[in-house]
Amino acid sequence: MALSRRVLLGHLAATGAAAAAVTAGPGAAQAAPRDGRRRVRTGFDRLAADGYRLLDGHRVGIVTNPTGVTHDVRHVVDVMHADPRVRLAAVFGPEHGFRGTAQAGGSEGRYDDPATGLPVYDTYDKSGRELADVFTASGVDTVVFDIQDVGARFYTYIWTLYDCMVAAVLAGKRFVVLDRPNPLTGRRATGPVLDRRYASFVGREPIAQAHGMTVVELALLFNGEFVPAAAGRPVALDTVTMTGWHRSDFYDATGLPWVPPSPNMPTVDTALAYAGTCLFEGTNLSEGRGTTRPFELLGADGLDRHWAEAVTELALPGVHFREAYFAPTFSKFQGKTIGGLQLHVHDRTTFDPVRTGIALLTTARHLWPDFTWRTAHFDHLTGTDTVRKMIDAGAGVDEIAGSWEEGLRGFRGVRGRYLRYREG
Image 1 (cartoon, rainbow, N blue to C red):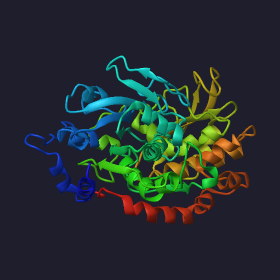
Image 2: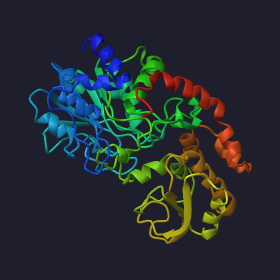
Image 3: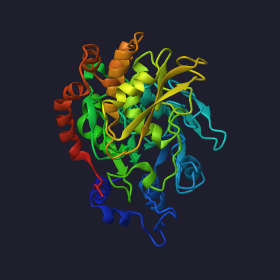
Image 4: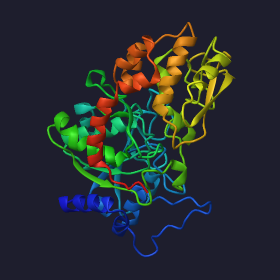
């Protein structure tokens, strides 16, 4: 696709109403949902409504998972495969797999998809030349990315995006990113910015823990700031933005169906808490895996009501805590009834998941004598060893949050150059 079209799409994305003109033909307007929620058109919606012109003449592979769906929850792979206007030749599955059969830290491997017959290639835990070789072996010349993110730096799909962009450069492939909403909204970035000394698959490059960006915005940032250093030049990038989405929109304002992006992300409420409470993966406390409320239920053997009381005294905005008891069916404390608490977010506009996660850690560290770190994992999640060391030293939430403000200001300045949606 010519550069002029990439420039055109970027310009239209920035001008809001004009963006609809790219794909809105006769009858293309979306009716408002009956429950009053605004109807957002995803990047895929707009690509399809435009007759897939962005993919015309290209042999296409797509990086996706169960979240790559239309408004009526048909998978985009099934839709594209049935459409003669698209030469869909391959699917690339991330962590948890294309059809979502694998748990955390797993994937589905190489197989042929029973529904479409398409070859499915495994991207999980692959990067650089190894991943480039996968793209080469697939025979595609354009790689499309369409996955729902949850807004946290350590959720691995955005690093699959980054790794695939780098690999596309190395393999000489064009790259197209289709946008979906950030469930946490796009109002702000918060939390520590990754120190490259702690780079891993839960954080390749220096962005904030809760980045406040969509996948298209992240792709533009990656391509402008990081991909050239990793691959020698930027990737040939096209993006298709959404219409109808504003930076202040939470997911349930979009009219889009929620499909769990991974087995332990069952609801939008999970995503709201995850950017902070996933840090408990880096401790010996349960982060609620093996329950119906992962990342909202937290606990350990020996904790009780005193934890909820202690964190309630901190008067954190937008969230209440109640004592809770649960028995995880797998993961930490499997089959054992343990004590702890459950988060109840009552005001999403003031709730800060990162500060809340830090407050929960500081109080648990003080109350539970058996508290221990999974040091390497925790430092990779926060992207620094400073947070852990300050908690060990008895620092309070405000002091710990102050430690990342300088880096966060720098990231916000960079981030601002790549934002594509209005506040609303």
